[in-house]
Every structure is written in structure tokens, then in C-alpha cells.
Length: 132
Image 1 (cartoon, rainbow, N blue to C red):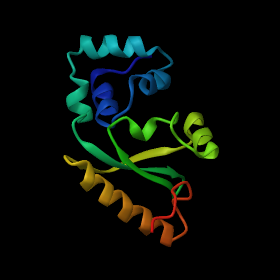
Image 2 (cartoon, one colour):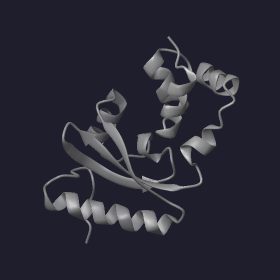
Image 3 (cartoon, one colour):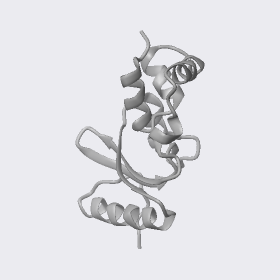
């Protein structure tokens, strides 16, 4: 079964990659691209690719990582240092939450650091380095 237009809009608005959407529906990312074109959807507008984001990775009720960057950064595991974090991302066991969008990278970084400090104080964000 493939996503309908509304589902596709929701996934793209949640900054999901075409590969991630395809995985949910057991299809190829090329088919997702085809549907995007068929429905005349602009994924760049929905994903707000010109914004910097702040995001959290959750397992159950715990934040395990806080990050910032461009829209696809939250789901990219190829540049992670912690292999446990990479494994959790590959397995699909993490929930991704977007907590901020900014026009300037510096504003996103400030928010990211504030959140890391907040979560470290309560014993969470175990995959983040300590912030001085």
C-alpha cells in the first residue's frame, strides 16, 4: 500500500526522507518521488529546507540526543560517532522530534546547547558530549 496525498504531505512536513517514507510503505524511494510528482507536491516547501532545525532523538520517555542542522540531519546516521546511537537509528527504534526552526544557524546552535544542558542535568542526552 502506498501513501495517499495527505499522508505524503504529513511525512514530508515531518522532514522525512524519501527513503524513510518508502521503508514505511515497503516500496522504493523512486516510487515516492513518482508520487510526489504525481500529486504536484513541493517537498522543499514542506520540509522547509531553508531553515535550520533543532531536534531530539527519543527512546520511550527519554531524550538520548539533541542536535541541530539542516532538515535531513536528524535522520542521518553515517556521520555519528557513537555506534550504539547509530545502531538505534538504523533499527528504527528512535522517535524524532523537531523542537525548533530558525533562519540562522547560530540561533539553532544556541537552542541546541540550552537543551543539551537541560537534559544532561536530569541524566538524559547520553549520546551528546558534555557542554562546558
